[in-house]
Image 1 (tube, helix red, strand yellow):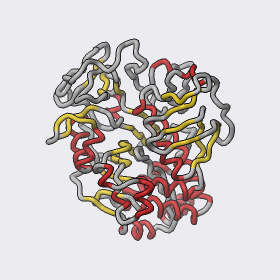
Image 2 (tube, rainbow, N blue to C red):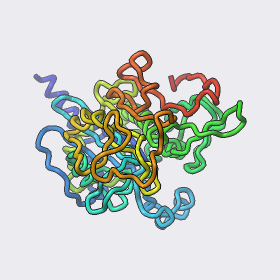
Image 3 (cartoon, helix red, strand yellow):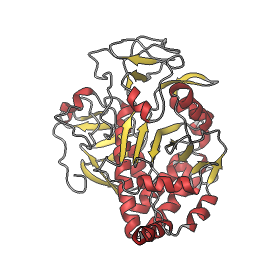
Length: 422
């Protein structure tokens, strides 16, 4: 008992923070004196929201990576690098995740929602889920409740500057690039393949990439790399977040000064709901303090199952919730699909059903298309991938499968993986 009291006193006297995000996605960890939490949280931007009161020990945190450029106002250098809020046309969610923390069972589940999911936004109508955020986080919270019966207890938003700051505070994050890579829209450019150590700017360009191209030596030209860009990007984001969180935790535990620097970068441009307390922060601390990129026993990553085999909507390619594949994952978030409110794709069906299912054009894909109907991964893997890339013989539970590459044979043999990317 004295030992347990000593351990408890040590934990109260310091803390480790790791915040994990998508679209802009991030993770942070810090060990410092307990009172510092109060000081730093008091300086964080807060937003008033109608969130659910927790009815059990489990909590759902909505984590949004926003593409807002509001932080560039009055900063010419930042505007030149990121652009302005006016030019960007408002804010949308670059990354959207629901983090389910169940402290009683010592389990944490991080579920990504693809930005192209077709949803019914209360008071707005049917649209992609990322555009719901253009009207503020309350719309996203209300949409998750109305369409999937998911209660959100707290909200966390991270912008580009926070993400870059965390990576730079750590130093660099290793990322494996199989071929020469570029994305002209995000500024990503890796002229040689292999294991790359990405700084904040390069890391941001990498995790935001939806128009990734690899260079084909045989074709002597750049070619699309992603089979399904929205989902491939989620896979890259989740792989990167696990690496980032693991490194942040390890460095913070070894050096409290580095941990404090990471915390400062996290909080500089963070937005939280007004109800998020120090106890909630400590719940996040406990949930992510043991994160390990190679271990999914404590923190698991998944993507909500969706299908591309549906009609366009308003001239846009969209993704539909896939049933019954999504049932188990929604249940783990405390939710369930509301078919009377949202379009869904059921197994064996070529057309979506439910409210808002009628599309404006013919199907975007066919059974023989390279954009397949997508099935859920084993919980703990990085994303939802085509069935051909996820089989018991090739992907073991606890590993993170690489995003599928479109027409990989045209790119030749990928670069070998070397430390620290192995």
